[in-house]
Image 1 (cartoon, rainbow, N blue to C red):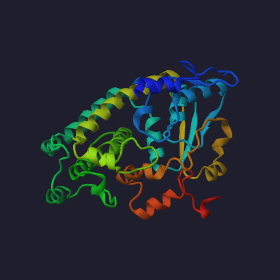
Image 2 (cartoon, helix red, strand yellow):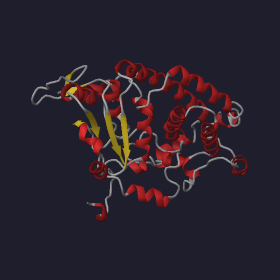
Image 3 (cartoon, one colour):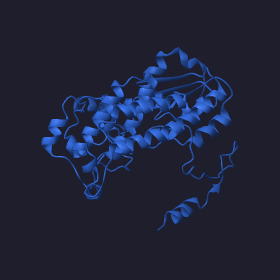
Length: 341
């Protein structure tokens, strides 16, 4: 069955529209085609599981917003925050996931694109003497360096304590990722640009790993993926540079939209349990509209999905920390009795 056939079958019974109507017909269902590569601000920055669709958020804002602040209590990767910013509306986001917090802050922080390009050139120059280190092994299907070579090269690099890390990455991929991260942290650039590059770095971790790249529910190296890995060629630097170049263009769209809307739009993002935060913060008194897509309980294992990224960005430093964090999520497949409240 072709992708076109699947698409046509999916559209049956739905009314195809370019955007959702402000007053949907009772009992009607609507189909919106994918943007198919169209740049939509910073939404594509990070592949977040069960991502909130921007057209739904736009429809909700256009239909229900009148004044005040918009709140998303289950923020995820910040779709509501980006859309509100582009329209010149103050917003608040809450999430318990460290990756969600980090990515959302980067996505909703406009950066002047020309300055960002110059800082990217600074970063590339700092990495220039490292790019060719594994160029030969990158050209070999399933290629890798020896354990001995790895042990020599890993000295003074920020390699995360991921249990059984060679299961998740080829050895030279670990070295390349660590070198990129070390350089991002050490090069002289603005902090908001540094965060932008680290977010781009986080977005390629899954892609250059041994794990199945498309799995939404969690993280695993499937038998099918293991077979593919034997013939895969992985270039970490090429993947990273390509991602940054693409996201600089997307950031340019957000910069342009934010300048048209207002310079003083506020995006406040809070990390932690939504019930505790809502009780303590007075800033929620100005909230007039809540738009959210709740966690997919028993369908998406959010903490497991971001397992590798959380280690690389140092949001967790041990298995105990990772497990402890997991029990704070609403979206997970198994919930202990102790967590039911």
